[in-house]
Each structure stands twice: as structure tokens, then as C-alpha cells.
Image (cartoon, rainbow, N blue to C red; front, side, top):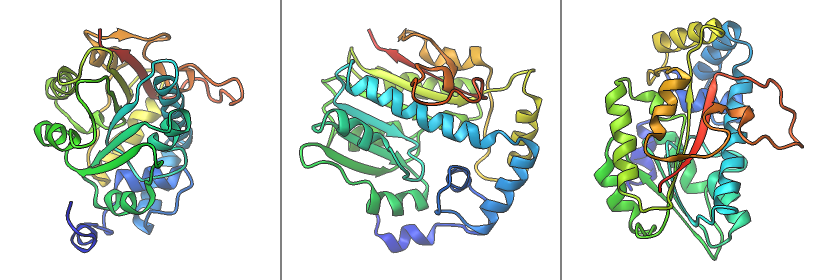
Length: 268
């Protein structure tokens, strides 16, 4: 990984960026005026957008707790980490299994700067960070192998990241290549912004984002999102609104339906 100064020099504070706007919507402080301005404009178009961000974060927590607990997974490859916040993958996993090993992958310079400072793991486990693009599969696998043992099951976390691959077949191919490199018993946890006739305001918000922000994102139907799990054993309740994936009775299910869908599948 490069040193902090060169990474920080890559941060563009003049254009809104997805990770920083997401951070703003979830109450974080790692954002700039341009991010807050566009974030507020998107929220005007779609007032429930903050609920989506929270639903996706809670889905991560429930999925990781299942994977580290019931499924017995001890290794996590989290690509498209986003800005650190409460209950990151390593914190949830190591609260269940202190010896869990986690590799984070992102190519956003602000994420990398904060990851180095904030993402610390347990003494029993291990946490590492890679500066790489989702499409750079060979580099990811080669570097992650320094921390993860690819002869043992791995949980591949792809939350809100394949939306940035516009071409459908390319995005399916990336996920398939990553899962092909993992052994039987590995799992895929994936979430994705959807498009639905019942949620036209979501389409308007995404169109506004793609006109003003970076990087551009692609919506897909729930059926298209489910296709990422082809060849895997899809865990119940399947690919659903993130709020409805094994909801915690202690958490209010409000709203029940958000335009962020997620699922978890097991490689046979």
C-alpha cells in the first residue's frame, strides 16, 4: 500500500462521492460540503434514502453474525468496504469469533486513509486492507492470500459494490470468478440497489446521482440480483429487501421494504 500522503492527494473534494454521501446519510463525519449538498438533494428526491443506508448496514451485521456463528466461517473478504463506521465486518465477526481473519478491499483513497487508522482487529484474529479495484481479481486474490487461507471456507462480502459495474455480464462474471476461487463451504453475501415500478422515486434519485456524482451506479431488478447467486445454495429467505433478511426482533422493521436487496448463498 502507498503512504498516506500520496493516497490523500488522490482525494477529490470538489466532486461528490458515493462513499462519503453514504457516510453522511448514516450520520458519519467523513464527508465534505459537496457530498452533503448532493446528499440533501437526493434525499429531497427520495426522502427514504437514509433508511436504505441503515438497512444495508444492519444486513451486514446480521449476515456476518450468521456466517461467523452458525456457519462457522472464520475468514472474510470484504470488497467495497466503504468508510469505517460502527459495527464493521471485522468488529461483528470477531465479537462472535475472536480468531476471525478479515481482508478489506477498496480503491477509494478516503476509505484507505481511514481504514488504516480505524480498522483494528483482535489480538487473536487478523485484519488487513488492500488498495484494489473489484475488477482486479488476480491482485485481490494474490494479496488476500497473505492473510486468508483459500483452502478453507471464506465469506465474500459484496455489499453495494457490484452496482458500480454497469455491464451486466461483466458484473456477473466478476462475482463468478471470485466465488470460483473459493472452496466448498464458502459463502457470498451481496446487496444491491434495485429498480422497481413501485419505487419510481428511487429511479429519479439514481438518475440525479449519475448526473452529478461519481462513480456512476447501475440498478437491477430483484430477479437480476438473484442471478448473482446462481450455482449457490441460497439461504432463506432468499434475495429480499435488506430489512427483511432475518430481521432482529429487537430492531424496528421500518420501513419493511427498501430498494436495497440482499441475500446470502453457500457454495456447495
